[in-house]
Amino acid sequence: MTVMDDWVTAVCGELDLDPAAVPVPAVLDLARDVAHQVLRPGAPVTAYLFGLAVGRGAEPADAAARLSALAGAWPVELGADPADPTAR
Image (cartoon, rainbow, N blue to C red; front, side, top):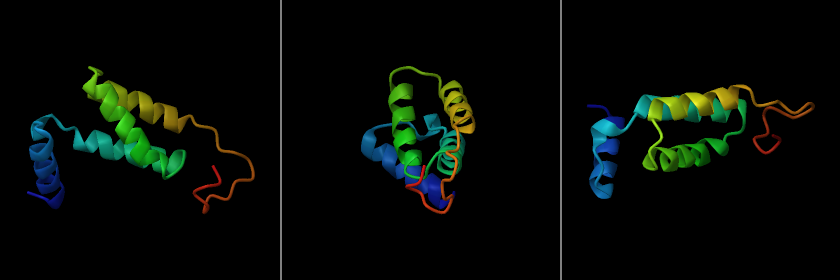
């Protein structure tokens, strides 16, 4: 097991969730896409919103794919400093 596996298992124990139902790779990919293509602070917020949608019945792979596509299509503001996470 990895540290991530241990963490997910512990968190699921606290929240009474099934660790096998947690799409860790999809969540990590989604967070990466948002952090790199939209803005870094958007990654945890998007992960939270993703979790709300899945909790309400959305299919995880579909929701993650839709949100990653949205992040990929997000317009980059002209003149923004890519080193400044607040610039977008």
